[in-house]
Amino acid sequence: MSMRGITIVGFVAVIAALVLLEILGRNPRTRIPTLGEWLGYVMRPAAGRVLILLGWLWLGWHYFAR
Amino acid sequence: MTENTTADSPPAATSVPAARPSQPVVVVPESRLPLGARPARNAVIAAGLIGYAWVLGGTAPFSMKALVGVLLPGAALGVIAYARPPERIPPPESVDVAGFSYWIIAIALLFEWEAAAVRDGSTSWHPSLTDLINPLLGPHPVKSAAIVIWLLAGWSLVRR
Image 1: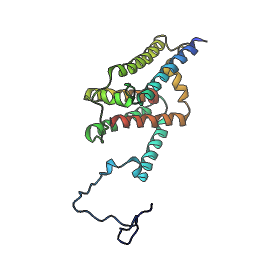
Image 2: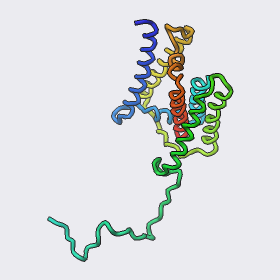
Image 3: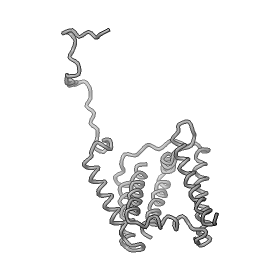
Image 4: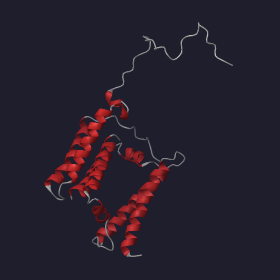
């Protein structure tokens, strides 16, 4: 496999792991929080809320304005 | 065995519930109605979102229109979150540290993989995630759909 292929497989593997964590988090028998749960927890303080929203804004700028 | 259906028994199913003055009337605020309760309003919002995403998706990269198109919803959500926050989904009191650590590890891996690609100059043999995703966002409908997802994600963040 080429280096480019390895890089792509690496990204796909990590993104697949994130999706798997979300699926596992929805199972009440696991202790893994869902994305919404831990984002909600991080956003409890105002600073966390601002940071997460800024991250969302940066994502939009990065992919849709550039 | 059959039910007793004598003339004394109350009529079934056809009766209109009588007003019970002792029971308080619960008025559900319009903002707390279920999502499907206002189809016309939802259709207007959906059309507006898709239209906005379509226009933004058609702007040229690095243009002022594209920048304003991204900043505008950001500013709108910021104002909503600060001045008139919607009903928020109650956040959990705590999250399991071990469970949360799996997320941290996966996100750190993603950032590390991306940082390694950026460090190498995002060459064709070690492209960054951005350089892999940008060609996928090339077609106008795909980019517009991605913008709709981004806008919806922003709204769901404001509700958190």
